[in-house]
Amino acid sequence: MPIYALGDRVPEIHESAYISPEATLIGSVVIGADSSVWPGAVIRADDNYIRVGEGTSIQDGAVLHCTASLETVVGDYCTVGHLAHLEGCTVHDHSLIGSGSIVLHEAIIGPHALVGGAAMVPGGVEVPPRAMALGVPAKILLDKLLEHHSREGADSYIERSRRFRTGLRRVD
Image 1 (cartoon, rainbow, N blue to C red):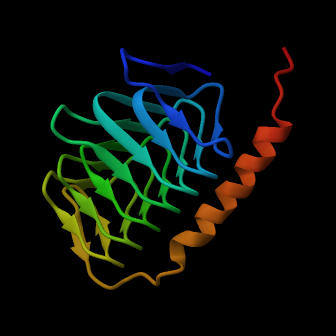
Image 2: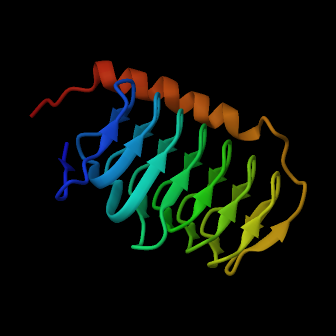
């Protein structure tokens, strides 16, 4: 798996995390316990840092980036869907970022919130706890989600990553 230091910026990966051989991590990246980074995902922290909490899945093709002045933080037990793009934002615990969505500079996704598939959360927008952000640009629907909605998805990816960590093998 391509894991790169950039100068003195070195990724830190918890021993229980699963990183796909086809994922790329560069620079000041921290991956928490029981988290997973799936094929084609790129987490590039060349100018600041990116933190992925415990039990979080960064799914296939997702891109996480930061800027010189903005870190990117993804909390515990989150799901970042396929082809999502996060840059310079904060995603709080137990949130779901839908496939193909974009969350930009200084946006804040509250705990237990959901960004719908293909939605775009513009810079500086806050999605409150248990709210849904849908569309382009995202419209916020308040108090639509129960606190347990995202934990089921996070738990399924924790189990999936354990299966991949022990059972994935190349056959060519």
